[in-house]
Length: 467
Image 1: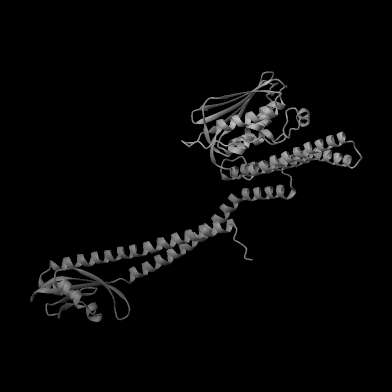
Image 2: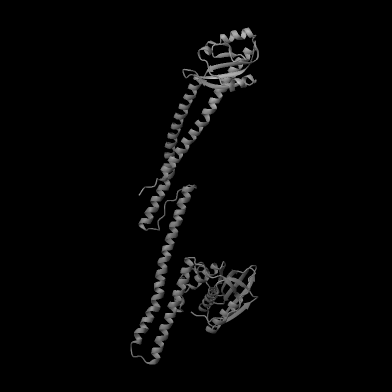
């Protein structure tokens, strides 16, 4: 397989090619400009010479033409030469009728031609007055071999300078890219060492520079820290999940072994009930893990109009029947409609009510209130329990985190209820906050965006909550 070019080589070649292209473009622009300038200078001299000849009398003009050093000829109206310099006699040029016609018409024309030996000449033609009357043509010429030689030297010089510029640019680009990419190469090596060794607690050296290389080092360290945190959370997740599943599974197996024995009906019923309770606990844990897995994979939840006031009344009524040891007060200010998943929103409220019931003594009051706040619906669940210490508040949304680990596990908690509440609220475009004071109680507030003028859905019969 063909190996791709390195970034350093590509940058070096790019700079070299660009420099060569710029030198070529410069040469292509300079050559015609210099050529035009040299020819304009020759034309100006020939025109000045023609003006001086035009000021002379006819006889003196013919004598001057006969004695001219360069090409000079006076053509009569009939096309016959009236006077010529020695150069004109030795190197006659075939002038086209267009050139002669333009000169007779009063125009001055300049053109380039070659003598018989290949020497380049610049010819100038213009109208002239002769003894025979108007219609004469004055032709002056000058060899331009020196100018052509100068142009050739300039071309060679431009080519040489362009080649030298390209070579210098290649060398400078190679040196500059090498020095510029050296820190990036070192960063790649350091990051490769971290990846190959699996030591994600290590970091690449942070360069004390505010350019792109320094920002890249910080980005790599941020990525390594994210990988380290993810792996740590994964290990903790597997350990906690294994522990949570091992306990009920042990109870189920123990009761199954007891059922093999000859037990009296009462003990057999107790074993079956205990095994069923632990199996339901495992089922609930698995369902919560599946829901959190959906949140990690960013799966889209259902979107439909939901009458939040009906949902709150149904959920609170079901919990009140199943947990009569607490007092549930419900306050619904007005009908509110949101867009979302009715089942997930019901689970959000059930988790909050279950959390309040587990962490407050029997007989205490749990207050649920639904109200409008601008374009949002505010759902608050407040209890008068022992409250949560300030050092625990930032961590209650972490999976498997328990403020009172012994009591929560004994009560059947999985440590996943509040993370699920947070996921459901954020999946509906809302958020959840908590305020707590030790000895006073805890209040959870869920804010959900209201549906924009959505029609209220038809009321469905309340479903019984299942663990």
